[in-house]
Image 1 (cartoon, protein in one colour):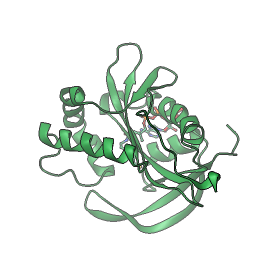
Image 2 (cartoon, protein in one colour):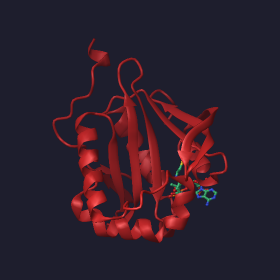
Image 3 (spheres, rainbow, N blue to C red):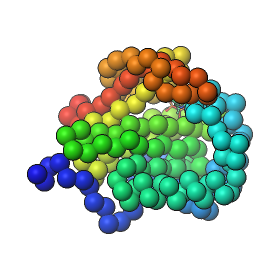
Amino acid sequence: MAFFRNVSLSEPAPAIVGAGVSLRLPQPGDYAEWAALREASREFLTPWEPIWPSDDLTRGAFRRRIKRYVEDQRNDLAYAFLIFRSQDNALVGGLTLANIRRGVAQTGSIGYWVGARFARHGYMTAAVRAVVPYCFGALRLHRLEAACIPDNAASVGLLEKTGFQREGYARGYLCINGIWHDHLLYARLAEDPK
Ligand SMILES: CC(C)(COP(=O)(O)OP(=O)(O)OC[C@H]1O[C@@H](n2cnc3c(N)ncnc32)[C@H](O)[C@@H]1OP(=O)(O)O)[C@@H](O)C(=O)NCCC(=O)NCCS
């Protein structure tokens, strides 16, 4: 049945443009800026992310990361984006659409981060608002999911501001910073109001 087939993209995902930001697949040349921003934001990010492997910020690990992103995208499993501020092309963060399930689900989950010095400037709001139409349009998903630790006020605020609805509470849902945390579950449907 045509409706349930996988999306087959012969070209890599295009750059996506939002209000004051643009998003594209990470490239090898992004390494230095990415590693510097992640290192400078370590204290800000690590409470909310899976434990960083000891070699996470090395050039070799970044190369492997990009290889995985390219393969995942080719296989329609995940789409990773870096987010750049339009005015000066500075790297501000990242957004990944992952865990894509086709068939009767047509769903995926988003995860995101911004560098500490770029927080609360509206960049992730702009990035999410730009990616959602791509997910429901070109990628033909029907549902977008996101989950966050209840104490993560920034993530809760972001999801509610960008039209995600709280649907539930999952116990011990993800291992974040080495601990299995309960999570709030959010989702947006293609037919939800914009
Ligand atoms: C969550 C995160 C990506 C938000 O990115 P951001 O670019 O700072 O978000 P925005 O500036 O677009 O803010 C969107 C909304 O989120 C909420 N918010 C953002 N930062 C907040 C903070 N420090 N305290 C409370 N609410 C906050 C607000 O509701 C805000 O809307 P408002 O500014 O109109 O009030 C960022 O805080 C981050 O990277 N945090 C660390 C990593 C993380 O939590 N990842 C997600 C794991 S689920």
